[in-house]
Length: 252
Length: 314
Image (cartoon, rainbow over all chains, first blue to last red; front, top):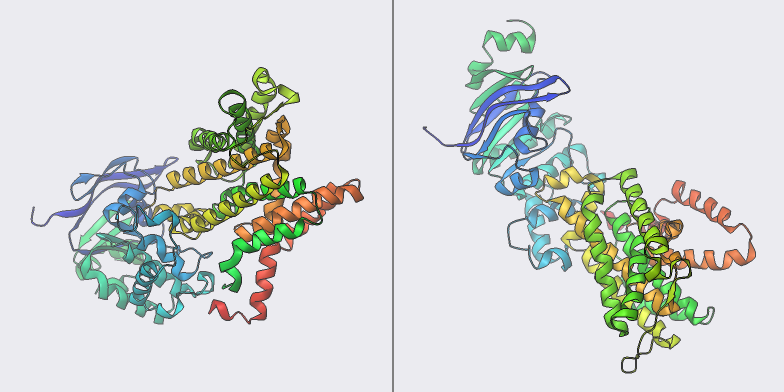
């Protein structure tokens, strides 16, 4: 094997009441690689992410993390290993302040740092935590908004906050589920720039709808259609393939 | 938001209850204080973790019966009995918690109620031989040094100390990362799992803490009254603590205490003036649920915040 795989699936399928959302997908992500998955709506991309991150177990097949079978491993344990994701619809905690959103990922479970002593009875606003939250916010350009109510943020800022959450969990592999959906063009530019800036420190899988946005970001592109992987390879070549053009644009 | 007197909140609680003394009998005031401990325990579960339970009386009752049975059969030392009661109520929570905390919403509320009814049945009928059934039983505590449970002033001071202690510990707990975790579980438990937390364990833990604290309140009540009856575990009385939390404003410890006192004042004194006082309480509650969702405390802080022009939130 040339490079070792950080994340790998072997023939994973997911059926919901007879509907096959993901069908026999074998996928391999190398250490340090940045890869993209594209496909039309309902192609099974998000379900595939859910299988990778432990939202639910697959009906068939196995999921491997650095060669270890994690198929039945619950979501929180996968996070402990560094499998970190964001959600298609931004998922942050509206009822908390921006800074409070970051406390739980800064005080990382299994990290030992703040775990034993400070988790239950020490102030979540103490300087060492606050500073770490501030750093995480500065990374995504939200440093001035730490004490704001999260519900008052724009959708784009919430997306940045969610990425800050993910980054502060120190991902080994980061899975971004349509991170540009619902953002303005200016915000897309900012988030793209952010991902470019940080992607060197982990492996990356990004689901996207619009191919043009991620062609420069990823070194490999996979195309999903009706639960199956139908093409894979260099982004610029993949989008030239007739089958891809067929399912994507409805013409070859 | 920042509240200038937050540093002195424990003192303010003490001062507040001392101010009640001229208006109420001391035993009644003690009763108010103990009820506030119970409301605090419920606020952790409902206000912070967002799980509405229809069965907190089970834990109050577990503590009440545990303290009585301990004093009767094992040792009349009030401190030992009180500690035993807390452990017993927490153990009940630890035992049934894994079944209960898996659920949410209506299922959570009703499973709690079901266990409460089982507990009520056990003390009323199944173990009537040991619990005195419908008649209940009296509790006898020995004097420890100068501490005498029979002394009304002593038990008042002790209860107030216990309330402040419970308040202080919960304040630390809820402002810690664990407190934030509970709030994330309330808002979006799945998301909390994807931050790497085994939410099941923490929900179970919070359930045990809440149960233990409710049992503490139950045991204190017995020290105040000197006897236990099945009314201490009666599922019909669950509404009291739910009302109190809603009145004060769920998810805030100051609100829990304000709500506890307000409910006690209403239920103790409205009843002497109005025959069907529950009806008015019901109407009041509808208003709270539909117009003032954040309770008295939320309304007060909201007003203060708007007077300061929301400067704090920026």
